[in-house]
Image (cartoon, rainbow, N blue to C red):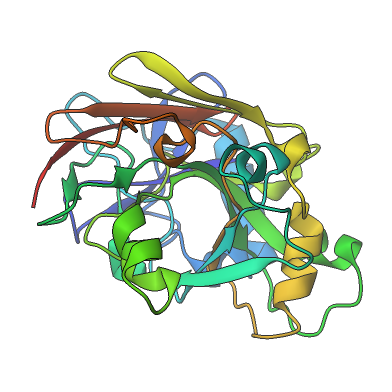
Length: 285
């Protein structure tokens, strides 16, 4: 199923995109698309049955804002340098273990919302990524297969990053990852049962119409199931938590000088096969 949240910021309601591309209202069945929904198989089954019946009321999508497809996110965990191609383009050795950082849930915006370039920023960068949304509580998992079994769904993410803040200002990566609006998410959450292989998804990103990233999740150093297993050794992953699993080659930081970092007025578009497309205009904060 393709689950969405639509409407004004802070007043989104749950929706579903059916097989015919019609947006359907779910507010008569559920209150939100969140961890509680993903953890409840019986409610998910009712939603699926309602979708298949064709009886869900249609929504007029014209002018309707699409919000982030997951509400009440507890935590967002980022995985750094998780593609062989990305590590190579910046001259880094592939890590022996996953590199972790955290993003605050209040950085999340809708897939087409404006993204703000921080004040004083000269190195704001793009990162198209596969987002993994946890569907059941994961702690001390013993295998990658168990990790995959705890995934509730997948979504497209732009892990926007300020490289000077992240790398050159000391401390942790978090200061370059947590600026306002730095986690566009969506347009929809695709339930895990509809993703045959998360290690075979094309990832693409354009800046002002020019293709910058053209990768595939097969190039991930640590695949999705292993990432979930690994994280569960250090933290409890709860339903609705989001993991951003790294970006393929093609970011501004990996380009020759002068590196084409984002400026106000730039438009970034990105997509992952089956997970939809995003479009953001970048403006000054």
